[in-house]
Length: 325
Picture (cartoon, rainbow, N blue to C red):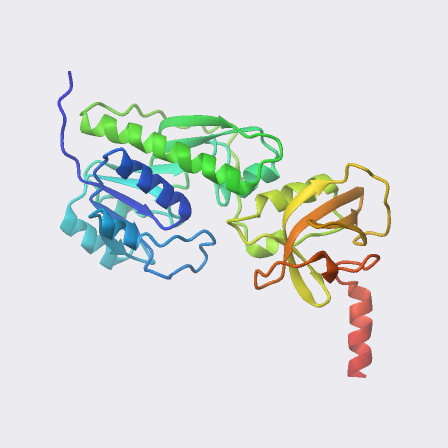
């Protein structure tokens, strides 16, 4: 029977998923020595940022603040700790060799795809955009590549039809906690973690996504647009278009069950308490839960039947030239 050992375990994370996982580990009596995270209030380029300082203070977890995990300052602080493992709960920067070397054992990385499929950026939005009905959370030993390290294990899960990214996010956060608890118990019980090399067959790599990728193009299909709205809803910036010189964000979407209305592309055909029915290239969609650019809810009275969403570029250019002439 394996004896119990002590291991100095650090975590790194700065988002809501990180909080959910760290909270779960503490509830399961896992001892976390230090958290590496973003400074309080620093949410630049982190759409789902979550400040973890109060939680760490409450539970006696030391904190290292950094905006660049590979900086000499961060590495110097880690060397004074002498940590054994790093659990990656949610961090987008690539770990360089000098950082990895700070940990006497290794760094455990995670990626919410069934690696080697879906390496790279924005895995949850891409999972919905690709219309997958199954995926996995992969745990692996981090190397200097992008999601290329030896696999520890993968926790597979189903993706129900119509899933929004927040639902997927919650599923991944739950699996993250379960997986890291299993790894933690394996470590302290002095049992070996089984590592397997990732296959290089059928590798796919996804690119970075930005808030502008949430733009709604009414010439696209209703299937494509419906997936887009689900993929970039909370906690991400949302899918948007323009109307009355305002940026309008739609957070929910539904297919048109009646199919009785038709109009020109981008036209508002019908209204309800939830939103508006809009014509696309191959059908209609209910665009629901609209807000303005400041996050304020918009009543259906804001929209006028027969109006068109978006800008007609040719007309806008003509009007601009008339004003300049």
